[in-house]
Image 1 (cartoon, one colour):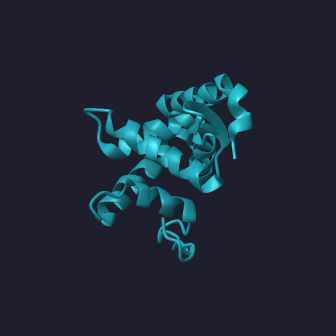
Image 2 (image 1 turned 135 degrees about the horizontal axis):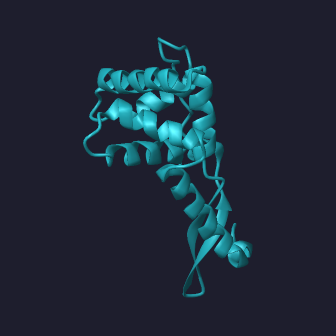
Length: 156
């Protein structure tokens, strides 16, 4: 870790099609090996598929689905007196979004046999309805934090 100064947060340029910073974050999280146009094609295809399946505004569906995916608490390992405790801690909003997008991309990639835009759309649709792999992962994270609530006094 650097001892000089904190890194400054860079401002995110909204995506060109929807002029949304959230969509830009989704595109950047889907990008691999610097291939942004491929990531844009995937995300825009998923958004079009969401609009076709739900009949609602796709940006509202996307926003609601990602809000459902975000974990609120997680456990961190703390070593106290030779023993390692799993201590529940609240998650910063930026990390909540990063975890949700990472989990979404990870579970969409595991859906073999389906094109990536369709896989992303299915993950988002399931999250919008409060189901699916990402929601299960979030609930498991919350259960782990709940089970270790006794060690919350070690959080600092």
